[in-house]
Image (cartoon, rainbow, N blue to C red; front, side):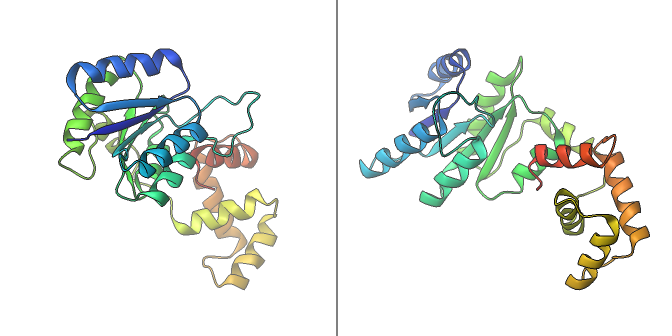
Length: 221
């Protein structure tokens, strides 16, 4: 079982509520931080004291205020912590329930669990922590069902290349030339147009600008 847990969450009520629920079930030490930068400092100090955290629970989004921070999201914090201590287990605790976003996060090495904030999220957190003590990855059954309900279409490297070209403002003709130069196929204008339309449908985007905004929001580019 875990010995020391760090919670990164900028909403006091969520922080205190989660700490209270976990303290009823577990006897591990719990510390928390409202800013990702502060969470990383706590993590570094714990390592120097030879009393490292072995579990991070982090929100994805943090409200920006007057303070100038280097780390702005749970993803930034997770990457920084895994660089320092790769064996740390990480649970993302977020209101974001978009399947594509969750799938993209779970593909990242080091993300061991994902919990959507909601009515039963405290119970799911307790269950996830218990399961992660024995497993590398654990998802609540409801979340597994949600992910399985998604269309079978999977975003491919080709799609990412295409979306990056679009985000740089290139026309379909320019993209065709760029893809041909890189040896990426299919590279014809008609193939590119069909793929863009397919991506618009998949992401429920009204136009190309909306499509780019959507995929950036998902963290795909």
